[in-house]
Image (cartoon, rainbow, N blue to C red; front, side):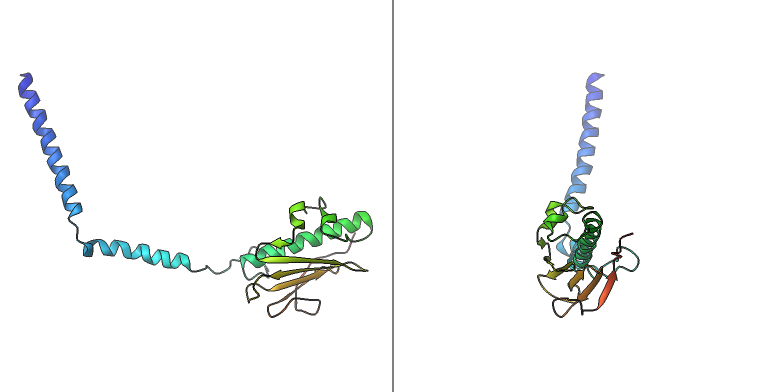
Length: 176
């Protein structure tokens, strides 16, 4: 009886093995023509991911045209708020970016002039300061920016921005 059961089990295992082997052979026997359609969507998705997606504004009224600009403008807002806090405590604006460290959310790392796609320029003056962010490559979505103690942020896509460039943002700088 034992040998009869062993024989039945052996036949079952052989049948299952034969089915699996047949499936494997059929899968391996696919010609390149039948496999090609499955590869086309992958190539199309790779092409689509290589294209840069359009910039999505971070908040209503966002004046940025790219993620790089959004980062640059965020940095400028942080500096302007830190300057406002500094003036509130010291009755004058900070004369350097390092002087702003630990004022508001301004950190020591933020005093470094290299900000990714942009370079920071800071110049104190008699009445306040001038802050510039200049892109490494000027373009329509990498404009240059300028701000001063007034809180106005100006942008220019053709040259370095200054107080005469179009104003795009107003940060309230009055101390209450």
